[in-house]
Length: 131
Length: 114
Image 1 (cartoon, rainbow over the protein chains, first blue to last red):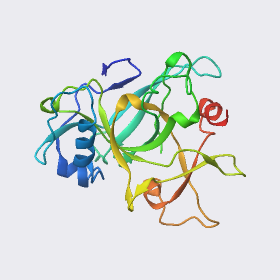
Image 2 (cartoon, one colour; image 1 turned 30 degrees about the vertical axis):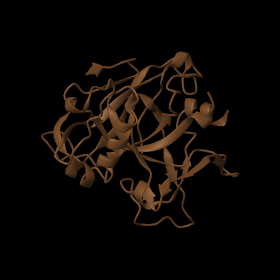
Image 3 (cartoon, each protein chain N blue to C red; image 1 turned 30 degrees about the horizontal axis):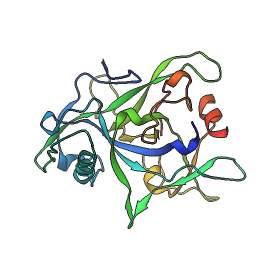
């Protein structure tokens, strides 16, 4: 695992390699992926020159992201990492049971409100992942 | 911080921006938006949300993963008889209206009822 930026989340060190845009659009049910990514890149104000993605591009995809949870705003204890899944179904492998496709729902901050005490004290983020 | 600062999304893809498209410090996520949690069901006291759409297409965006705040548990609103077509795997696709479950954990309850 690698801990990035403010360490309120972490992702796998090695994501799934080279997923095509066509696969993202069909399998991941993201039909407007290319359009949405172009819009995101165009709205980044810090870049001088924007290079836009093309149909032939491939992306490294994470099956899940871990969000830091706790301590509780109520009880004041309990730290953990909880998962946000965005993954396709997995086949049975060895003793690993098959898993269904999961696209979890999550609260997100408005732009410019990334830190705060709405879900946790001292600017910490709480999180878990569930349907 | 108020509830007006949070939104609900469904995450479809979490990915890394390829280097040739630029450097970005966080993973990115392709998400579908729900309406903001503003209206409450008078009986349950829970917020009610639906898919956010534009011209019958779901509103989608690519956002930075550092905007993720907290898990969100949505419960599909049903009539007296629950459709037999609904499963845990497809209910988010099949249902049109959802209750934001504020009872899923203590912190969510406190955050959504303040």
